[in-house]
Length: 457
Ligand code: SF4
Image (tube, rainbow, N blue to C red; front, side):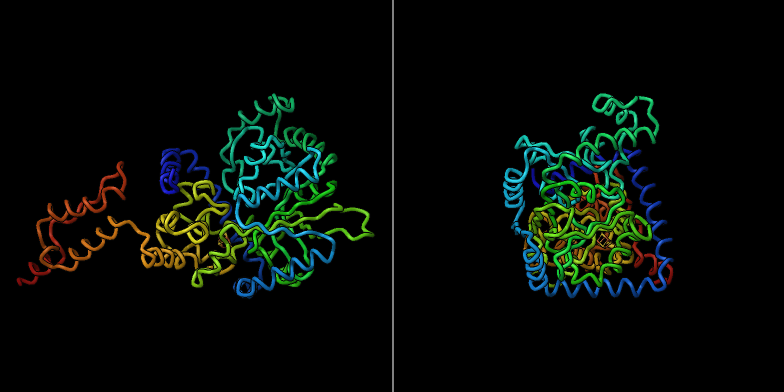
């Protein structure tokens, strides 16, 4: 199925689900108000945004240097860095690591990048069992469901279904309240920690100077997963770098306030290869750096700023389109919402994914709330411009706009009978407007005709 067809099919199935949309809207409103409140904790929030966006700009403009610094630091401390060009390349590298370093006890603390490389389904296809150590991942796995949204993964789940599933898998009481449920799940998850050979985690940030991996989270899943593991594999994008530890306070606070509306998230773990004298920490430390089209975004000079994204999700919750359709899965990308609509077409080609940049009202709210000051809505326009320049829009669309502009520029045509104008309007926009909605009717008389009548001309 073509990407656009897949997108249309998924959203057509989501739009009639009134409950789904109500949940989505409710969670967006709550998160937005928490974020707004958290901004008031800053002495000067605008200055913090400015500093962060400048730092990321410096990283993106000198990405080659910072990546090599990071690799050199990790290797100097005894770790390994693997570069993966695309999804298949990453999957094969991870498979080799799993076969080499694990006797079957693999745990993972989910990160959005795992969805990008389809890690779970790839491991399933190789009959390798990945055990979840995060609360929500555990529930989603048991219920065989996907993530609802990155910030609220369980929001669409039916509590009764969760109880029934957990009753059969971990013998949790069907009457369990929230505390009992948490306790039963915790006990099941804990067993996985102690026997871990290989722990796979993502990263919130990578620190170039020092070869450090930073994870900011509320569940401690990432921290716990590699606490007992013999090997820690980190999967991160090449765009997740910060220059040094000096920037960490700024970025972790911006991340927490704009992701979940908190001052700081509960667990902040900074890790690197274990020193010989360290009494804990995995003996093997491997970082897989994923490109998968990020170099293409870097090559798009006007839009490369979009690589500054820290995946907080603030732009999603103010987006009218996202509030109707939700999750990353529709955007066929590890990010969702407006930023995915900029990045995915650049990563994977305007010809196949350029349609994503069209699904926006260009209201600019995403740009207003982005803590990294990414000019999201203007990047969407730039993507549209590039699609036209590269000639990847359909001939029928090109012809439609050509004819439309001819019509609109002719006063004679504009003043024709309203039935004729309604017919023309319908012919152009019926498909885009949707089968279920009535197109608005064009007024009987044009402004020009009314003006002439009023002034007796
Ligand atoms: S683009 Fe969206 S997700 Fe990324 S930093 Fe900005 S607001 Fe957050």
